[in-house]
Image (tube, rainbow, N blue to C red):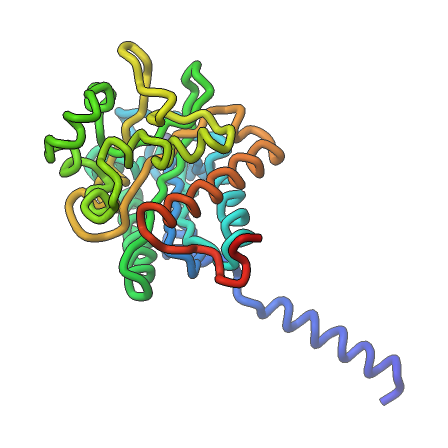
Length: 301
Ligand SMILES: [Zn+2]
């Protein structure tokens, strides 16, 4: 074969090999849920940023239908930041079907409203998160589940949800620490039993997720600097962190992240937010899970 023939054959072969590479994500049977597998003990989900509005799936009749703009792009940035920092990526599960058609952060009755196609997507979404959590717990004893949303509240701050109400979060430290009912109803119940920190420290101290974010210039509530005050809107978490957090069983501890516009609306801001969250997650694991997420040779760098 002449040289140019060999070159041509080589180019054709390498193009074929590239085309045969597996996609980075896999799609559910309906095609409306995507799962990027990962090796880190972190699972991220995005229920409310779906754009698909197929006519054959009826619109929901009641309930919130607002789209969480940029939340999927932010979660992707977060996955990239974690992979860069830890050398391993978290699992990511994204619902691509519009919230007008299905709400995966509500129970199936409210979320799918009896529509079989919507019910199928709802079940696929939760099955993929369950599968990701099982994968994590098959390798390590503990992990963290983050459910990512966007909010349009006036105060530009990250709202972290643990299934504790704003009123719960206004209680004095002594009450949060000594009344076990607060721990028991939270989506980080399992972590609260293991960490050496008090419960008030875990949810709003300097080493809380909010505290660690504030330390990195990301305003967050609850934290050592902010509590949800009376009359202030605050999202405390919903179906996802109840179903996939540790309130009811020993599985991953769950936190809902509600992200304000200026932390998510451009590539640059998403990258900055994602970097801060990845660093905060690293410190959170170190303090409360007693686990280092970065490979040993990269620590201290
Ligand atoms: Zn949402």
